Length: 355
Picture (cartoon, rainbow, N blue to C red):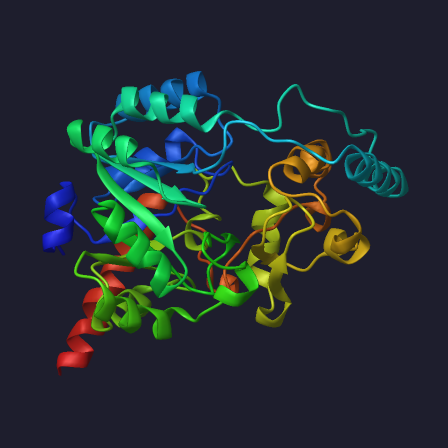
């Protein structure tokens, strides 16, 4: 069902697949976009050339609008040497105990440079750019608009949505506490910004006059309609797409999602150093988060070898199994079928509400 928001982006449905960094290969992005929704490449971990290469692959799979998502971060990071050494010792000991034949190492750089990623995004020229962890600079906003790239910010509070609106964003994704993955908070501590989506949406609608996108815990067409009733112009779903065959999430992670108990979804810092929502598994319980004391992306880089080895070994219990609060409602199926199913459910729910 095309809305004013969908029409502006050149898509058929007011539905966005969340840009989940590390889990959104070109095949998934293109499948979602070709089905009439907005596929999104999570490029937060990608070097600039990889962004360009994957954008080219998406275009080769179908010339439909798509998005690229980035994390707004400084170009350089300084890390506490003693804290890095302590975290490495803990991680290496855990991997040894769990029988994983890999150990931590010091990377040449803790994360790709945001300025270089941003330049690659501009060169790729997607229809939409999605940002989290902060607000982009005025010159960057002007550059995106000069290239006719629609800008979506991520907010977890009313103050953050106002900040994005004042910066000139075209729309803002409101990330409720139910959302899986990294928290987009930037004006508040993440733990102070865990506001339920259906409380946050009406507050944000009252605060700004740009389109708002609902994100967090939406898994079916009823959720799409509920978000619309509360004022959302569209919905952004991430966890719902994790079990699609096109998604590159580890198979062990995909197997665990249908079995997730809602009370075991929690806020975690131990994998990356930044608050994120996911499954409380063996890693979370074995690694006291406070003992590491390293921020994102430093800790994220140090845990990367463990996560890769765990995925190869089929050890979901040692992975960062990010997921939203309603992860147990996943329906494993091809992405295009999931988009069609969601929109069919939405239409049925709308008829039921009207009747």
